[in-house]
Image (tube, rainbow, N blue to C red; front, side):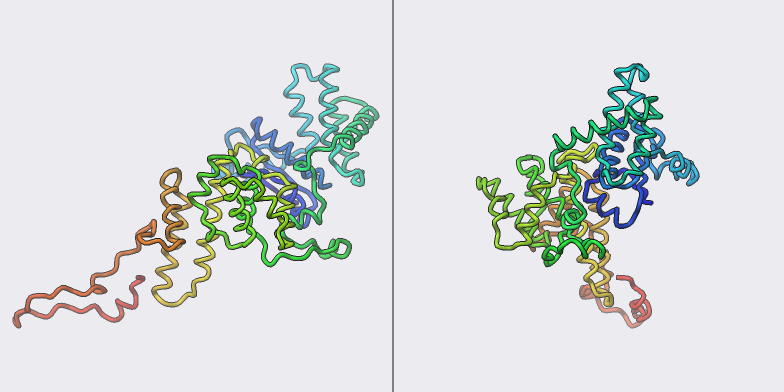
Amino acid sequence: MAITPASFFSFAADHVELLKHYADSVLLVFDGDAAGRKAALRTGGLVLAAGLPVRVAALPPGDDPDSLIRDKGPEAFREVLDAAVSLTVFQVEALRSEERDPEAVDAVSRMARTVCDTLALCPEERAVLWSHLLQEAATGLHVPLTAMEQELTNARQRLAAHPPPREHAMPTPAASAAALDVLPPPAARDVVPEAAPEAKPLSAAERSLCELLMHHAEDAEVAVLVEASVPAELLPHPHARAVLAAWRDLRHGDELAFAKLSEASDESLRRMIARLGRNPSRVAFAREATFREAAEDTIARLWNERLRAERKALTPGDLATERRRMEITCRLNALDQLTGEARAHALAAEVSRLRGEEGAKPDVPAPAKPARWSPAPAAAPVPLSQPPPETPSEAWLEEDPF
């Protein structure tokens, strides 16, 4: 079983398909307010559409897992998990709480239709799963099971006649694996033809940036942030750099910039552009996230990846390398902790440093060098009656961390 808390970005279909490789059921933990209930039902629908049993646990108002465990101990969080209910029970309870008279015929009809619209997402071959949930719905709504079965049949017919937009549709396991730039599991490779692998997969942050640029190219706030803080040199993957260049061409009047990428000679680039065009930006499903917040988060993750890779590439050993390692760590911490204008200035310094411009200074000053490392000014002659000044011992020099 996988336990998934709410995060800045909501789950997308490809997350669920990846999760299927590691878990056979999912427990969602969400805030107990109206926004949390809405997010739980949306995410639960994605999980159910993948054929996985899903339960939902609601946190007490004003608490997140960290604050709950810190203030009331791990047992309090365990009680929340133990109180989790199936997605259907959770949905029925939420719908009943919104009705003035939940026993009225019209209210029951509305709730039954809504619940069956969700159950229709479950693959028909998962008969044990959906039939059990349907029984729970019938019990919770005080409706005969035969009536709920007919309502579910109607919901499936509606879904077949008017399928949701592609951005809401669940991809197949093979398509989801391709969207994540990972191979399907061995069993799937036996029956699903492998696509030609890309030379190197995009990082999660690069993929988020490409989604933002393709789906929200006209957003002015996103444009300001990207132009200021995302030089092409920041992106290690050539496909990400190609999307950034096409976005800039689009902003300069080339309306066919992204269309040209879909006709590129590089097959892996064409496949990636096609996937991004079919799938929605995950920001569209993010809970309480604006495009600007999504851009800020993505840019911070890009720089975090860059600095961590730079630090990892350092070979441990000499004093200069350790000084460099500590400087990068300080810069990472600064980017994580700063906000607003302070973070913007820090990012500007990182851009200047990356481009090699003159005058770029670290955001966090390096430790001051001991005076003995700089040439000492000429001193007045010392009378023979005074003892000579002490010289630092070799042992002290070896212990100096700088």
